[in-house]
Structure formats: structure tokens, C-alpha cells
Amino acid sequence: MFKIEEISLVQFRNYAQAGFTFSNSVTGICGKNGSGKTNLLDAVYYLCFTKSYFGKTDLQNTQLEKSGFRLEGKMALLNQQYQITCVLRENGKKEFGVNHENYSRFATHIGKFPCVMIAPDDVAIITQGSEERRKFMDYTISQMDADYLQNLIDYNKILQQRNSLLKQLADTGSIDKQLMDIISDQLVGVGQLLFSRRSKFLDDFIPVVSRLYHSIAQNDENLTITYQSHLKSIHFKELLLKNKAKDIALQRTTQGIHRDDLEFGLDGFPFKNIASQGQRKCLLFALKLAEFEVLSTHKGFPPILLLDDIFEKLDESRMKNLLAKVCVENQGQVLISDTHYHRLKEALDELGVSHDIIVL
Ligand SMILES: Nc1ncnc2c1ncn2[C@@H]1O[C@H](COP(=O)(O)OP(=O)(O)O)[C@@H](O)[C@H]1O
Ligand SMILES: [Mg+2]
Image 1 (cartoon, rainbow, N blue to C red):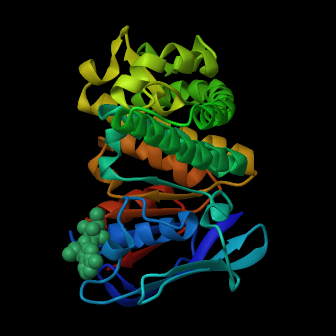
Image 2: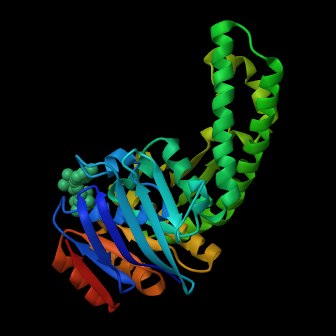
Image 3: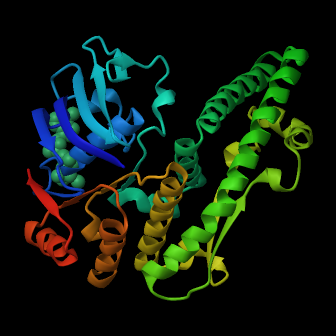
């Protein structure tokens, strides 16, 4: 099993110095707006991912008017103890390590301590542009497959190199053609790998999302989820050849797996155009809990689940159904934040799970 037992925060956002212990598998975190609930959950996320869930920079993570911060977590994973430490030095240098051994590459850490966050703005995955959905897919697969993450990092680097060459061609009228061919071939190689990994992942993932959606929404609407990729119909090498003139004119690689998307439909229409706010929330939970489920299956133990302000998202009966799913049926650790102590206390008491509530 995987649990965070303790966390300490120094100069991390609103926390000058604080420590928390999580002794039960379910912990409620209560406090009024601005009291630091989200910051505490994000600190736990940070220790699992080496960065903030909300895309905050380390400068933003540091307490105002201070320089540097420190986060430390005591984790228990499959009967072993781990101490995860992140130190941002005053000179801006960041060190991240487990049991006093610092990583030379932070990416190595991803997936070892799996974690899923559900936060209020996550509905962007459904309503915003394709980048949000790619990020969601990539973070999920990366936690299961370290090679995928490395390939993704490589792909983005090669893509940048190719785009700079295209820009250089526009600026100067000439480029090293041989170099362009080498870079394009590299992009094709890594791109095809990422495409097959995403396809394989989605074959397993999509049916889980559909099942969870129907169970959370408690209806049998016709939800469709389709993987959109240029590479579904053409090999990447041919695609680059086909787009050569366009890529040169626009000075960037116009098509490829960096434009992949997940398309959601409801009764044959685009989901984001016709779904109600309630339906969007149901789909969001279905996506996140599907991530949770596939990670659990893959790892053999459940990830830590961080639920930020979750009560604001669903009506009461759906909420209770969902809490039962995540707090009772699952054997993992759940941290839930809420502004209302009594609402949270009542919901957790009703579930009959042993829990603590931290009041900030
Ligand atoms: N870098 C920072 N330094 C000091 N305070 C910060 C920093 N970043 C955020 N805060 C403060 O943290 C508080 C927000 O915390 P948050 O965890 O979002 O609260 P909650 O989720 O309980 O509403 C705000 O009062 C904000 O001013
Ligand atoms: Mg908050």
C-alpha cells in the first residue's frame, strides 16, 4: 500500500513552517477560503511529481518575501519507508531526492509515488483546448511508463529543433538539408512510439471512463470518446512529407502527435457544446477516477487521491455515491478538502470509514 504519513512545509506559499500527520487512510482538511487547503494538497502532489499541480513556478511556490522553500514527506510504500525531500536553495537551485539521494534527472521520480488530484478548475480538461487533454493523457501514461515520459521529453526537444530549422529557413533562405532529414527522421521515430503507446493506453482507458461516467451520472446517455490523431490514417514520415510546403510556409511542424486530441461526444454531438455543467463534472470525475483505476491496476496498489473542494462540484446524492467509491471501496489514502467542517464530518461519519479532520 502507499500512504503519506507526514509532511512538513517550510516557506512554501502561505506556510512559514508547518507539519501535518496523516494517520488514517481518509483525512479531511478544513478551513475557510485562503487558509491553505489547496496549498497543502499541492505540496503532497509536489512530492509525488517534483512540481506543482497548478503549474506554479518555484518562485510562486516560495513564500512571499522569502527565498527558497523546503518540503519533506514521509511515505510508506509496500512496507518500506521513504523520505522524499525537495529543497529550493536560496540561489534558485532545486534539489529533489528520496532517502537522502538526490536525483540527477527529476523525471526518474515520476510514477514511483503515484497520485491523482481532482481540483475545481480541472473541468478545463473538457472545455478548453486539446493541450489540456494531451497533458492529462501524458501525465497518466507517464506514471505507468517511464520510457513514455522520456520519449515525450525527447519528442518535444526534437520538435523544437525542427521548428527552429524551419524558422531559420524562412529567415535566411537556406538550411542544412541533411540535418533537417536527420531531425525529421528522429521526430518520426519517437512520434510513432508515442502514438502506439497512446493508442494502446486509450484502448484500455476509454471503456473504463464510459463505465464510470454512467455510474456517476446514474443514466445511460450515449457518451463517445474518440482518440484523434493524424497518425491514425498516415505514417508520420509520409505526413511530414505531405506537409513539407505548409510547414515551411508556417515555420513550424503543423501536424503530428503534438496535435493529438480526445474527442468527447454526447448523443452524437460535441460534448462541450451540449453537456450541462452537471454532465461536465460527471465526465471530469469519470476521467480522473479512470486514471485512478488504471494506475491502481498497473501498480498493484492505489495512488494517493487528492480531492480539492470536491463538494462544490456535485449534488449531494452523486457526491455520496462518489465518496463511497473512493473512500470505502478503495484501499488507498484519500485527502479531501472542504470549507465546511460539519458537511465534511457528516459525510465521512455517514460513510463509516475511520478518518481524521485537520482544521487549518
Ligand atoms: N507564495 C506565497 N506566499 C505567501 N502566501 C501565499 C503564496 N501563494 C499563495 N499564498 C496565499 O495562500 C492562500 C491561498 O491558499 P489556498 O491553499 O489556495 O487556500 P484555500 O484552498 O484554503 O482556499 C492565499 O491567502 C494566498 O495569498
Ligand atoms: Mg482551495
